[in-house]
Image (tube, rainbow, N blue to C red):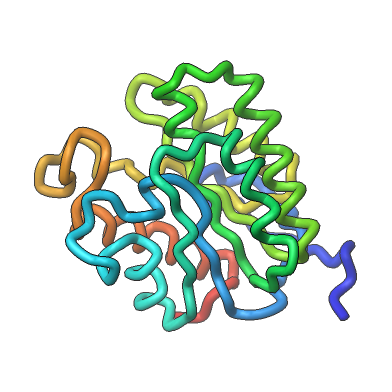
Length: 201
């Protein structure tokens, strides 16, 4: 049985370069869930096989479950924590916060919601990974997300849309990637998991 206090000291948190302790590491199994908004659901992808979670699973050779719902804010994420009550995921990757920006949710509210989400998912025994999505007008949030994750025992993957957002060849509309854009996102997340030694492929 995995003890709640089991921690892995990582050489760095991907994207911010600082020493970090990730709660529940190493993952108890190889199953992964991607939890979040339209970027997880795959709005803009041509099929279910070209969403970011599906492409991530193919890259890693691991089962990845898509738990994305378009329009979700961090408050919706808190409400959806009950979905994980009996879950056994090794890793849960959270992508939330973009809709908070669009809806002008106060930063303090977003932070409090993320803390609840991180803690609730960690209570299930999973390693939690958070992917940053801030946009060009909110770049200061990236640093704050990094500090929040470091304090919360969460692996942070910085700015997953960097190099994708604003590139017409990688976007399906003004907000969502196309298949090639989602591939870029999957590559960045996969690399973060490999660096953290949470995945071998």
